Length: 89
Image (tube, rainbow, N blue to C red; front, side):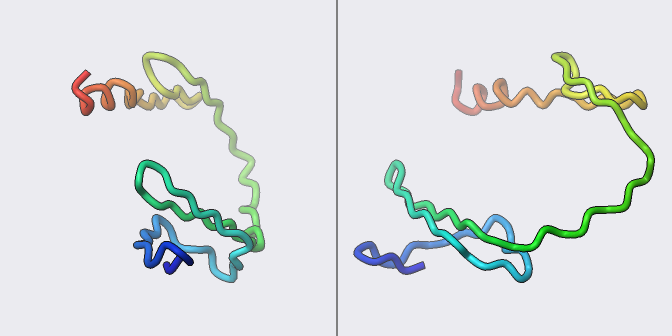
């Protein structure tokens, strides 16, 4: 991407733009020596899926991240502890 008075800036797309979308607004930001570009796009909302009549209850907890009403338990990934290990804390 070429930015006036800055020059070429390398762009990494972390997801594709939705088909038929139009870029409505661009925000260019410099933080800690890096340039970031945020695109705000307009597109038509996809058609919702038809209702199935099935439901599930979700309970957030400490030992497990999620407990579903069907008995499924989803482990807590402990993001803070993983980050602390990477930082050497």
